Image (cartoon, rainbow, N blue to C red; front, side):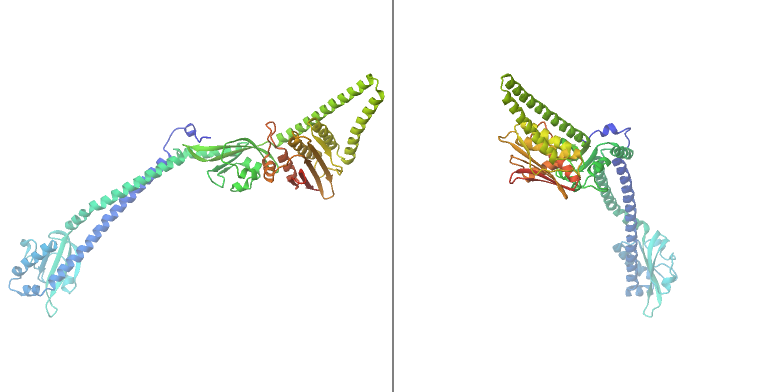
Length: 523
């Protein structure tokens, strides 16, 4: 059974579920990576700002605390003393400006010599109070991160101020230098994300067979409606799974399964160990039903996905066929008896024609007495007329097949209870038929039937001259039916087992002192 036909189901091909998931996932990934990249740039800029603040602060403090700076400020021309020194430091440290100024803001040094002697633009009040601080301020070189610190003499008086700073443009340049690394990492992350999304899309395509959400919903609705409406039991197992993935209502009814998940152990014994092979119209018997079972393997693209088990109820049909078999057996017995009676009558007539009148009377009387004796014994011992008639018919049928069928002397049956007459005919008839079939080809074949009714139980024993069945073969026969004949379904023992189990009885086979099948049903 090949899991195909999806294309025929699809009406108006839309975007597949896998495609929609891929698009949503891709958009989400792009947004996440874009936001992550922006946050990464912001974090790099924040780190650069912090590093710049620490750097300009350290440079300003180092210059302010240098004794040479105090001496230069007190010199007659501080500009000439300080400008060369601060420029060398500026070039070595990579800052954009270092300004040494008087407390009144007059610049002693600057990157642009034209601004030397002009007032410093920025906040210095906190530095005049002896505090060192950093700020972002728009000065003569544009927006910059600057640090301002006081220059104090030995007495603790502020004799000058030092400011070092880096323009914002330089900080931005430093951030831009790291952008290729950030963007490269973002691109690599996006590439990996797209590859992962493509792999997920491929997996979803394989699992959903390229169907869209609407098609999957419709397929599920159709699937659910079909499972609840079909009149055959359906049980689906995935490969090597112990729990069924699909069990419809009819399967639960036929197999008497409980509500909820169904495991293999919940199935009838004969179905629990069914091999994963194709099965066609195989009979299985439960305590209540005769079932016809078919099994198919489900494959997709050469892979074995599991098994599909379909079950049909043939209980009523098998009961009718059993009654028909009984009627045919009785008819055959009557034909055999009529044929035998015709032979005897022919012999009597011939003896009369030959003038042997005494011998004719003696022959006819002996045959009549023998037949009547059997009839009288059975009708006296077996009070159920249908069963007595069955036994008489089976005697003649066995004779026709070369088997000696006898009814044991201790046979005694006042009532078939708890069985009905029909059930009793089914039970005894099937056991006798099985025994006759088993020994019909043997020399000196015989079958013996014992039927007794006691206060506590109904006892039936059918023995024969055959070798009997092993416990394994007998168990297989009562579970599924077993026969070596092509014209017989081998359900005799299975039907008897169903009947006996339904009435709480016991069915077992014996091989010593002779082959026999014994039934005990509590009354």
